[in-house]
Figure 1 (cartoon, rainbow, N blue to C red):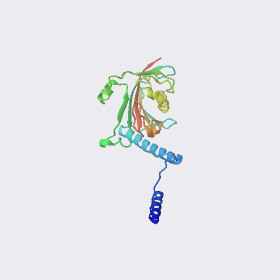
Figure 2 (cartoon, rainbow, N blue to C red):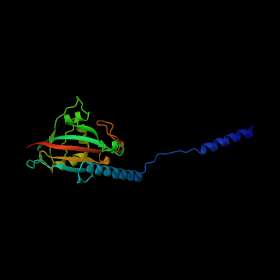
Figure 3 (cartoon, helix red, strand yellow):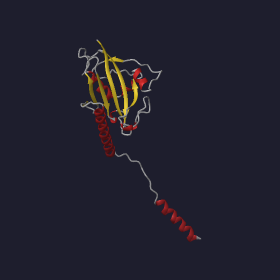
Figure 4 (tube, one colour):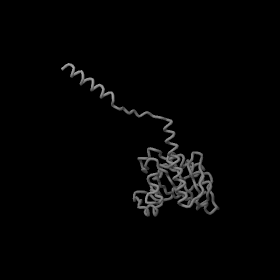
Length: 214
């Protein structure tokens, strides 16, 4: 009986020693590689999108956010510091799993201040206030309103930088696109608040400068 008990204990010890234990250890080098790989994926999708809508030129700000002027406007009245500007905005997201759905370029709308556009996408919300976004222009986008249905944009510093720079290049009636790689937006975690944005999503904004008040 003694030998049997010893044998059972020995088997138990050996079986326990073969269990695999996984420990999640932060690896900054791998984190950097993953980030660079994701940006490569995002940039490829951005260029595919631009090609799909017939845009063959886009520039970047220092942080790597893309913008493209689609209409320079009436070329008479340009925004200057402390002018009151009013804009229309539509925001969309896409990512690698959404982009070529149904053999087409698919974007998901998540924000607009244009009621007719919201209705056309089935995105209309009767509790939202659809009107031009109006704020004081200072060339940097830093005065973008925080208290509004679009206040989340005031927290995206790279969006504000691209907005200020793009507005400086157009006149009243002009328009442009801002295209944000996921690393410049909500990254690998996405946004679980309003508006909800999935992980690793590119943000694309269509913006029109509809009014300048001196």
